[in-house]
Length: 358
Ligand code: ATP
View 1 (cartoon, rainbow, N blue to C red):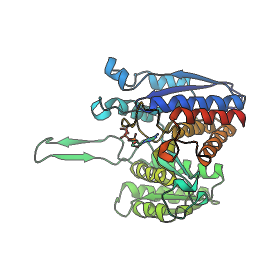
View 2 (view 1 turned 90 degrees about the vertical axis):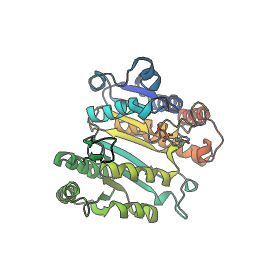
View 3 (view 1 turned 120 degrees about the vertical axis):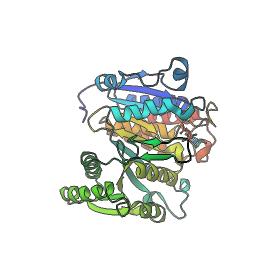
View 4 (view 1 turned 90 degrees about the horizontal axis):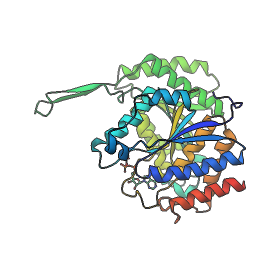
């Protein structure tokens, strides 16, 4: 992990597209306020990658970018990528998937923590019932990009998409989940797959899980098929503390988790390779339908900045950001997606003010 003795943390900022350009300036305000309050130093460098740049000069992810991030930065804070002017959002895939794969960010961490009872659509559930983390494998599975077309565009077309599961990839994400639980003082890890139907790839998950769990005897390890997991997340979310699963299932379970805590506007995520430069972002996309209106919720981005602080070893600052968001929600200082009437900038200002006065 990063050493506390090194002074300034070097952070790359990629606002990206749409509401990414609105929520990231607020997350920066919040980050700066938390850093100042904690006597910490940050050095920010902004990159203008996104649809405008791509349409202007064809730049998506410059070829030397991964090496530069590894060499010159401790973390990356990203807004969102996606723009209706770019067919298929090719630039977004190039940048985000490029960084995920080339920086080998094999963990996708999605906290699903309910801050206020009113925000969950689940009847009768409160803060104590919804507090878990989805740990998603982030570099393999069906998202590895292996497959192809045969007789494309004809009536006989065949499309294949291969599900890649490596021994190394499965083991490292399972170990991360157990280490995460141990570090945070959680007692339960649930691994989810579909090994009853996916007889090879997910059989590997089952076997490696049986091995790895033995190294963490103090943690209760359980297993659920993905269909049952999703049902249980809605029926009784309190049973979960750490959920670990493959790329596709983690994508889906993470979004369901976001729905349980109040929606996309307040959900953060981390794309992590422990000990190396890692990337933090709100879960939401560029939301072109509300871009430019100063109504996007900046809390997901602010919480992503908080996760980044925690990752960089600034746990007090990470906690302070989370506490400020919790306070804002309790006091109704929010955007309309979570029931308030403030603008994006007003929420950012409120959070920064709260951190400055804490
Ligand atoms: P992309 O293609 O970049 O993923 P998208 O519009 O398909 O963008 P999201 O941006 O993830 O998908 O969001 C879906 C909808 O949720 C948006 O259209 C918007 O109405 C709402 N939404 C997402 N993020 C926020 C936010 N931060 N604040 C308020 N509403 C949001």
